[in-house]
Length: 320
Image (cartoon, rainbow, N blue to C red):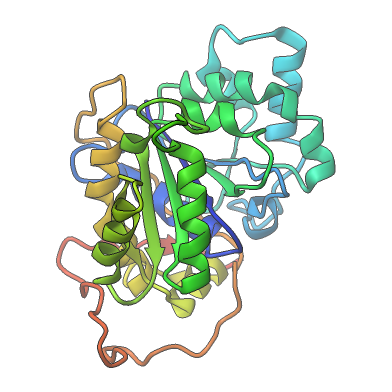
């Protein structure tokens, strides 16, 4: 169906938290973003994934770190390209509390080294499942080991903080992915139409300014919008509680049409509407609770993210 890779240019702007919320909301996306089957969250961070550390099963038990990316690539290595990729991926996935299927990643670079040669086959397998896949690939490093996966993706979302350092690294990462006048870039010709930028900021107007900045530098990619810098929402999503009404989840929800449009620009399968999504997962906290703006109050000069409307459903998160 659709393969969406989520990455950061530098640091830890919250790729895993954003990927969790995006996958959980896929099924309810306007325009049928989750059509084609149950969304899958794939932890493909070669530096070491966080999914196994944050999630629990329905009965409160830890996920099995041996069932996931490692076992899937072992099966591919032993049997070549699978004839039924959907069934193969399902056998190596686990369900977390709340119902979201996840593909557990590697624990660190040492394990990732054994997977690196199989990224092309893995990308083809995930793309062939016929279901939406959100792939958390973490921070894009200097190597190009993930290039086959990124090239196979219908959309590549780059997450960055709307700060000077973050935007500077974002610009260089975008240039490397899509290239310039004399270089087609890591993703090949036409890559600009499937790369989107998401900014972590409580100031929504920064999206338009950043897109203008990128375009003025010869980088014609879309800035899809902003996701709220909401420590309280991240803690609720990760530590137990009902996160559906948080600014974080509301802001991710507002991005769904833009993500859908980006995916639709390159997806080979027509997106159709009406497939209900899973309940949201129950991850462990990505970042500790921190001081946050009181409800209803925004810093001076900032535009707030939209408040909860009648269409905003709860994302149930079960405390471990």
